[in-house]
Image (cartoon, rainbow, N blue to C red):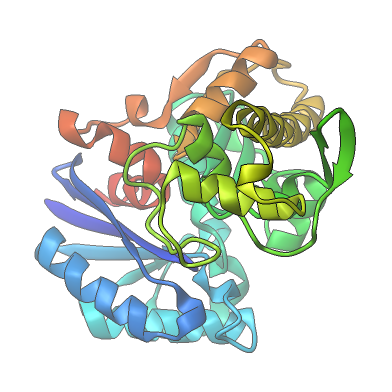
Length: 338
């Protein structure tokens, strides 16, 4: 097809990638928190349609069906597919292991469609690299998917199966809860337990460290206040029962480094678990996608694996290379369907 737009409907973001004659020419993401209902997604689609333009074909994948707006994942698949069809017209729905289905067959394939966006990336990688490990670190989660002998070799498929296999880690660069990253932190020479409230997110940690990529933090902060280093110190301090003024800036930098290291270790441990089941190659190249590329690069170094960015596997206009990594499932769908 001459033009295809791949759409990835997440719980808080809508991502889109346009391919023309197989080349990715435009990629964008839009805030669309489904917890607030369907209206944010409707607004995101309206903006995205204007940005992406008309296409010969539209293909969707999703993870948003997990949002608590819906009573079940099946209902989520049904309502998100219906909305996408009303916004885009004729669509195909990516059902992972079941291939592509038309919108009117989505409910019957809900178990295959639900949270299958990782499968699109892995399928594309399998066509390019016979042995690899995909690590896609987004705002909320990290996917770790083995590819062996040119096939997707994941042990799990559903979220529950992938969580059990270590192939889905609920740790993301932006929306990950600090209290889910560690249960304590070093403070004034002692281990201080964390307060189990969502006072801060990993975006605050990475903002303090200067490691938050530009443009990836599009959601509101945990307290609704500004996105500054000073405000992030205040939010992180609350996790430890403090105020930012209780310590100097260097001390808060050390605390932020602790949480960043805890996040790296958790994802590296999961990657080691997945690799331990890969008899084809103990150290395959790591294909890095998502907004956490620098985190993944460090994990590749620790695991002694070659680091390859996802965009290097695709034909992409130069100015969209970073965006392709950030919106990898949408880009993968556009490339696979071209």
